[in-house]
Length: 254
Image (cartoon, rainbow, N blue to C red; front, top):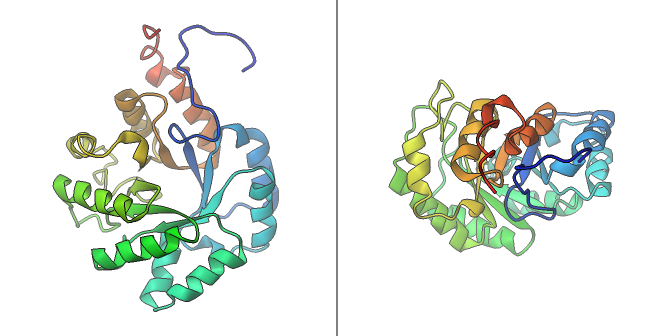
């Protein structure tokens, strides 16, 4: 930091197991990725190439090299996994991970119907190859999953070998954990936390109000995902109580 302030929350240091920021690359160019990492690399712990953007991104490996050289792991979005699964191409998906030396994989079923035992089997198989993130929640706003079911699914996926579980919100932040307005389903979140350790969950929170909610509830070192590149530094100021939304929240903490 460039100067000293008291009563600023202590942030975990890389490599972090909690308090990390997952940024979403929705199609950055190589130059944009370089600029992004130059400015935000210190605060980015993992980059997701959103949904199936890696399929159509020009100069894909050149961009991945930017993340590799910065020591920032990356992965392809869960929708790409689902696109392979629905076409019965799981082995081809595994070959893609190897070809591009992708260190993480996201296993999700937000766009397809997938038997949960089969999903857990995919998690177990991939966990022998890469670090697995599994996503719980549907991209269908009409599909409401009760809290007990979220807990059950998350625990089974962790038991199957997932490193962390992701709470679905989409890139827009208006499904899954959130109502269509973007409002947090606070009862759902708090019930999940009675059974699943907070450090094992990545909460997708693309909207500022959502980020503020999770930071006030769980502190600066909550795991947050689907953060737009231009929002990474603003998010860090929220984590540190240096933006109006959390300005008073940490002042009395020693």
